[in-house]
Length: 65
Image 1 (tube, rainbow, N blue to C red):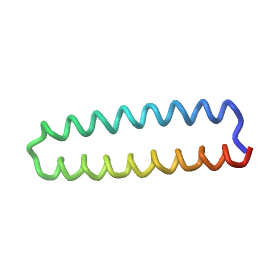
Image 2 (cartoon, rainbow, N blue to C red; image 1 turned 90 degrees about the vertical axis):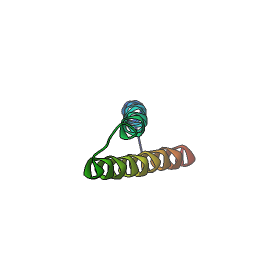
Image 3 (tube, rainbow, N blue to C red; image 1 turned 90 degrees about the horizontal axis):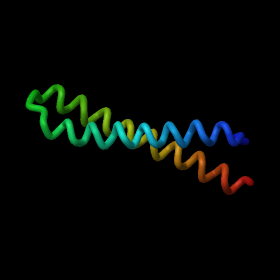
Image 4 (tube, one colour; image 1 turned 180 degrees about the horizontal axis):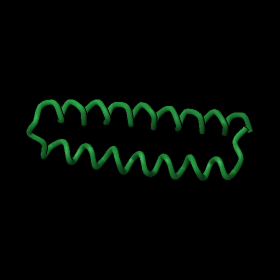
């Protein structure tokens, strides 16, 4: 069971993850080195995966209340 404080931390984490995800999307359009572009793309995918996982945890928590 998540406490209200846990939920606030998760909300902040989701907000920051989303901001970083959007920034990586923007910055990757400016890159020219193939290796760095690949690294950014991999990071973007992982952030998306983590974001979805956190949302899923919160949805489950809401169902359990």
